[in-house]
Amino acid sequence: MPDWGRTTLELMVQELQHPVRLDESFDRRVMVRVRRVHAERRHRGIIGWLGAAASISRRPAWAAALAACVVAVVSIGITRGTRTPAIPTGHAIPVQFVLVAPGAHSVAVVGDFNNWGLNDTALVAENHNGVWSVSASVHTGVHRYAFLVNGKEWVADPTAPRAADDDFGQPSSALVVEASTQ
Amino acid sequence: MSMRTARSLLAVLLVGSAFRSTEAQDPRLSNRLDAPTRKALSAIVDSARAQGIPVEPLMEKVYQGLAMGADGTRIVVAVRSLTFEMGNAHRVLGAVATTDELKAAASAVHAGVPAVELGKMKKQSGLRRSLTLPFTVLADIVSRGVPVAAATNAIKSLVGAGAKDKDISDFQRNVSVDIEKGAQPAAAAETRAKGAVVPNPKEDREHE
Image (cartoon, rainbow over all chains, first blue to last red; front, side, top):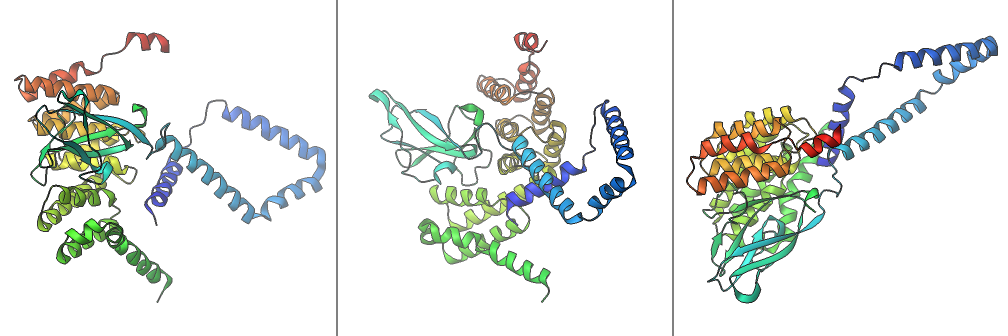
């Protein structure tokens, strides 16, 4: 089963396991309704009552289908409420990357968001005063990245959290792009 | 062969193709990884899939290794280590954790934070609160020298007090500046955590 399917199913199961909380007026409203139905049945007589009872017992398949629809609608609501921000996950948001490197000849930002492509996102030195910057579209989520200076030196972003897992002996940074950062 | 066995076999065949299909799409993988490395990575990816661990972060780690000029052995070690850390995070955070949360949690585990502490934070914060940024900041401050216990307590107190991501981001920035200026890391984290969530009188009035 794909991840999204498994997650949705688990959310459904989890939600269905929660006790249903009802407001205090629920009992009163139910009893009013029950008394009204009871009164109507008394008016219709015994034939009408039997007909109403039979219409439920003859259609378990429809009831199951209806229940499945309700669960599906509820699960969509749960998924939207917990996982989907105002901007759907995966939406690209412009992020500005800046590095002060006065002596550099070239600077690129390389990370998860561009599959660590060395030549994909080059920074530009504005006015040639050593402030290198670029605005790149980055999908929502958490990304590791680093600056590559002069095509050989890896530099972490001094303004960002460090990525703790420097498995390859080079520094890197962490970027969390939330939908709300837009 | 029973239907259950057939379904299991089909699932194994499908997940087994995950790394190989990516490999086919990206010439970097087939051109720059030797056959034993590709085989080892394929086995790790298959194993991760079978455990319900998202494989995208593993592929990103492969790309990172290639970009940084690491050899195949080092890439395999890094990907195996990440799989182990994500597996630990997956066990304590549960199936409701997002891929981003698992990725951030794996960084924290890598930094030395016990996975069980991350699980406690998830329970404390509720299912709807994403802990991607708190886990990222936790990994960051530990890597800057804040002792694991002090860092965990600081992030726990922030999350418990209902700190928003912006508050936690500001906390990270302040702690890193304090440490750069010579503050003792534990003291910086504890002090900044105390002042990170200050009730906004304007917001309080709006709620009244």
